[in-house]
Amino acid sequence: MGSDVTVRAHWLAQQHLVDVPQRWAHVQGVAATASDVARLLDTEHADEIISAAWLHDVGYASDLAKIGFHPVDGARFARDIGMPDLVVRLIAFHTGSEFEAEQRGLLAELYEFTPPPGEIVDVVTFADMTTSPTGAPIEARDRVAEILTRYEPNTPVYDAVSASAPELLAAVERVNNRLGQVNANGPQPR
Image (spheres, rainbow, N blue to C red):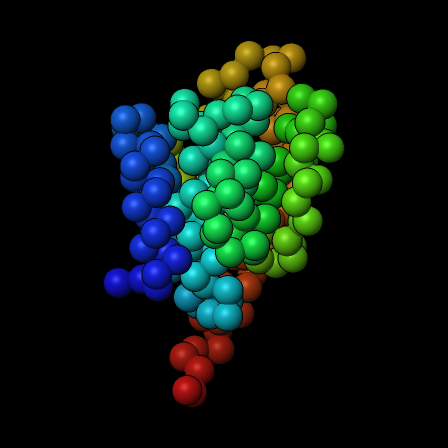
């Protein structure tokens, strides 16, 4: 069982995404990965990371899509219902959202929110980039390729993912390195 905030985030994601089965499957996989990784790497912020993973794609829900840019639509929703500030900021800035905001001319809307610390948003990005649309694990390079096959060249998502791929892969590598350090050091005394 999770904290109150993670339970609420799970419930909200399910309410808004259950009618979009593939998106819901992806979100469940991202949340599971984020839970595993956050509990190893960032116990202080684990609840916020897991909650953001549950809600990272909620802005795709038709009833929440206001400007048509899911990180901002999702972050505004989370802010408006009183989710913790870090959760809101992680939703806004997950998985290279700055690149897509620039493509869409929505940087001002994105910067309604303060960017979260890089090592924390890296965990959400890692979970998103290592989870396929069906919720199964996937290599990050394959995830980039998969996204690019779903969008036409010269569209905001295609161009943003093409431009942000090096940074997305670097975020995954940073988290893998941190996980490697934790595994090399073994369990820590309590």
